[in-house]
Length: 294
Image (cartoon, rainbow, N blue to C red; front, side, top):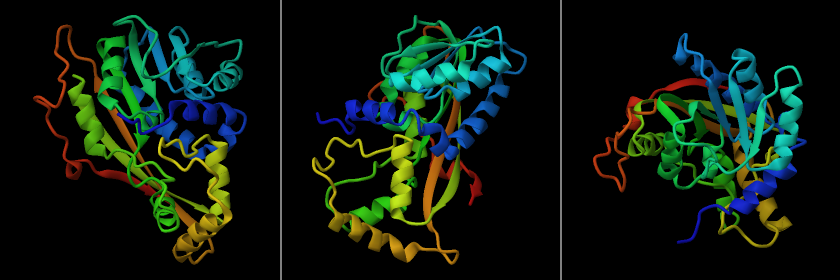
């Protein structure tokens, strides 16, 4: 079976973006802040081990370590240059552990983690139930999973513009919120709660948007992407297709849908539902859009 994403391309893109990511990823930091607020679901509990999956430059890991200084906080990322940036975020006074590994194969013992935190990493994963099953394996019974990902409205304008100029795909189709919730249930997590935000960012032109995507490592990692450069002609055609969306203030809009979820690891011995058997559905109509921000 052909994979949707080229994992080596994803790793290389984020490695190259390590030094530019923080400056470019304002939206990621906003989503991170909102996801960190969900740590309040733990109440007075103080976790012993927190795993930050897809930690990038380690800002969330640093915030978690500041909140719980005695906890072991592990920043996990598949791009070593990102972890080098994370060392700077850690500081000598509140250090956290950095581990270079893949979210699809967590190098931790079963039931050894109290909280898994993962901000805007899972959109690069195609087999969500398998990854969530790995998260469940790592969590102790009753452990908390907090995660976010991009939804299908993300970069919809860019996807449509390139679709009019080039038959080769340029923008990933991210899973809808219902599919994300179903994957949690399929993996055996209990009491999942999901919501979403819609953001609209603006840019002077298409090249400005593309530069920012490259700076944050979000390049075209689709396995069936064009093997050669897009070319000036196709890029110009995509720019022309985007142009009718220009707003009265002279900027071009770019939509971003962020899906958030929290769920709890079940009691020992609870089955992991596989192959769609006995999986309840999460209707998208039941999950409101919390905020729309321009």
